[in-house]
Length: 288
Image 1 (cartoon, helix red, strand yellow):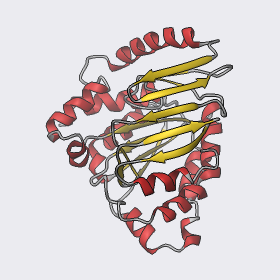
Image 2 (cartoon, rainbow, N blue to C red):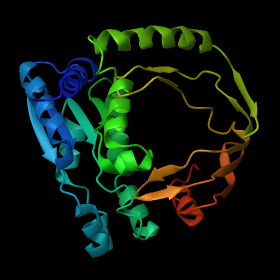
Image 3 (cartoon, rainbow, N blue to C red):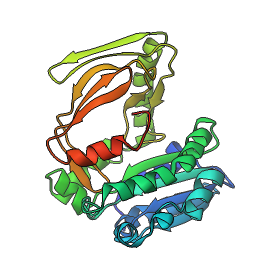
C-alpha cells in the first residue's frame, strides 16, 4: 500500500502544480528510486484525462556520457528533451539522486560544453513557460543521498520533505492557496518599487527593480516553494554577498562562496571549497 503522503503529493503535482487537462501530453521525469511517486503521478495524470509519458533515467548514465562522449556528442541535444520542452503541454520533474556527488570527478569544461549546447532549448523552454504554453514543476523524492547531505536519517528527512510540501495535511492544495495569498500581499507591495538595499554581516548590495515583474512562486513550478521571484535591472547590482550555506550542483559541493558585483557583473568570485568549479560555471554565461 502506498504511503498516503506520496499519493497526496502526486495529486498536488498533477492537479494543482501543472493543472493537467484532458488531452495534455505530460512528461514525468525521475530516477528508479522515485518509482513510488512516479507510479502515483502516472495514475493521477490518467485520472485527469491527460497522456502520461514516464521518462526514467538510469543511475550512472551521466557519468558515462561525460567520460566517453566526444565534444560533438556532448553538444548533441536529445530529441526527447527537445520534444518535451518544445511540444508537450506539461512536465513533472522528480529529483531522486542516489549519489549527489556522482559527477564530482568530471572536468568542468565538459559540463560547460553540455550546458552551452542546451542554451537554445532552455530559451524555448522559458519562452513557452512565460507564454503559458508549457506548465512544469520540479520536486524531490526523499533518498538516502539527500538525507545524508542534510545530515538526517531517511525517515526524518522524508518527514521533513512531506511536511514542506503539505503532503501530511488533509488538504495540501488549500495550504498552498494560503501561501499564495500571503505572498501576493508582498507582491502587491513590491509593485512599483524602484531600489533595493540589502545590508547585513554577509551582504552589502544595492540593485534596481524598477519596472520589474514579481512572480508569486506558490508551488506551481517548485514543490516545495514559498518565494517571490524577480530579476534586477541587468546592470544595476553593486556590492558583495557571502553565502553561508553550501551549494551542491553538477556533482560538486561549493562552500564559502563570495561574489562581488559591479554594474551587474561578477568582478570577483571566491570559494573555500571547489573555487575552480565556481569560476568555470560563471564563465559559462557571458552575462555573469
